[in-house]
Length: 258
Image (cartoon, rainbow, N blue to C red; front, side, top):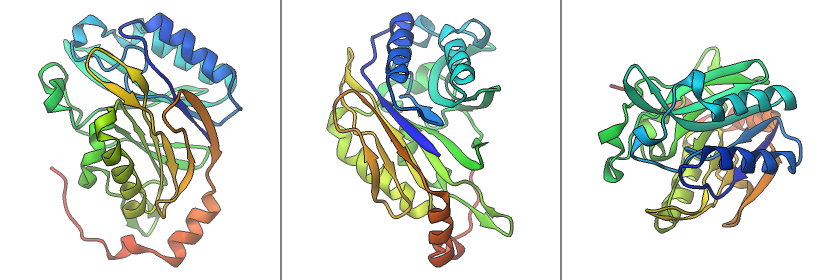
């Protein structure tokens, strides 16, 4: 499977401009099976959710994701600010050519930045399968909480094969971004696609650093700190062989998540 890390600046609270920009980035990129966009890619990381939130049926950015996946015969991943039932969600979508394949509402809201005051946290882990690869959907601050992301293994196999982390991770915390995303790959015996934004908003500067990791925590591809789209391939046969030769999760501790 070919995965595209779509790393870009984001215009503040300007969905139409961002839709046009990401459409141009994808159109000019190497074809891929899955394009991964940053967290809140259509607005920037806006804490004041009421300023930008839309219901699913009215969200132009979501409709663009659905149309793009269908026209390019690919999948897209990225989060949007969604309102539903009078509440606001940082909702991570996984879109296939058939439409919305999965929704994940960010579980760990960024308390330090005020996200807990405006948004409602999700409660469920979400795993979606695309082209025989199982993806765990995660968003930004989730990266710091390994228990919620822990892979599982049983007689039927592993819970998932790859984690997608979409983020607005600021420049001062880039070392944590790299270290934690590599650790999630190693400890869960999986690929990790971590996609961050560039540029700046009214709060922070962002330095990209999007990376695709293999299950040993080695880089398959990375973006650096500039706007770019990098396409790389994951090898499922290599992952299966690694898990066969070095099945560390068979010795993992059992626990319950509350």
